[in-house]
Length: 337
Image (tube, rainbow, N blue to C red; front, side):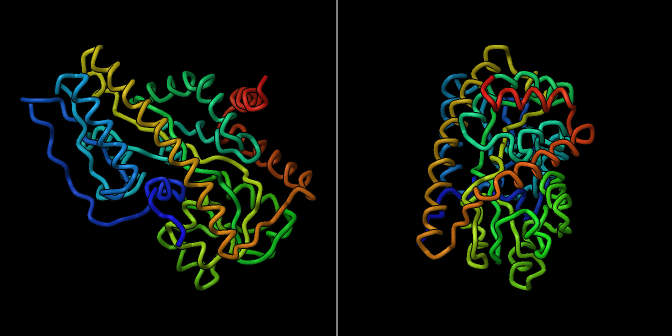
């Protein structure tokens, strides 16, 4: 049976998993440690939460129990849109989100997932290193602190029907998440009509054939069970799903300079451990699906056509989602220049 243990990465790779039951959280006590209330989609007991709890132990030890994390997992605080709203309102202090959540705070960050731009992990690492400070300034200007970058697998196109060229999508019904302007623009360029729906609706949409094309990572396709309704997957990925851990700047400023440094250092170590899990489990899920009968589609014969669509998508989003100078900067980093 396909492994499903890295469920958090699955959930963030698919986008926000809408769960009911969002509740108000108690404020941190004026006495005792400074508690950072952290919202997450990760289910209790998942591999992700094990790493997060290890992060909390390291943080408490290094600050001599002056700072600690209190996790609200399993989507109990809603989806990424709810997380950002609640951080702004002071109902939670921090949250783990994907590019979608990051983009709700700093829209230009979506450039990191523009199609055909960053498709390999070494490119993403360079982008985080060289352009991270630029994006982090934007987060701070918006009232947030990005404690650490993350990732959630390679974004591929899955389908019920066989496809080879971009124009083949015209006869299909591609899903586009409601808060994702990137893939929606790509399918519009090829002449298809994106079907907008939330993540919880995707499985039912595949069952009824309201949709038959899904952009996602392999680990997401497995954990959401979408792979059971899909038959084909592109060998080539068009992006890597990016994430991050955001904390409200006001909360961060409550900490001493020394404790701020410890928080950022321990967060970075936890994020890199999660990257290792994400990369391993995404590849394992991909190979497992192929072994179970999903057909791998090699699109290289039509690479020029796919590249042209990706380039046009990036161009169309310039000025609407990100600036031309920012796109050029990411292009330069991705090329290793």
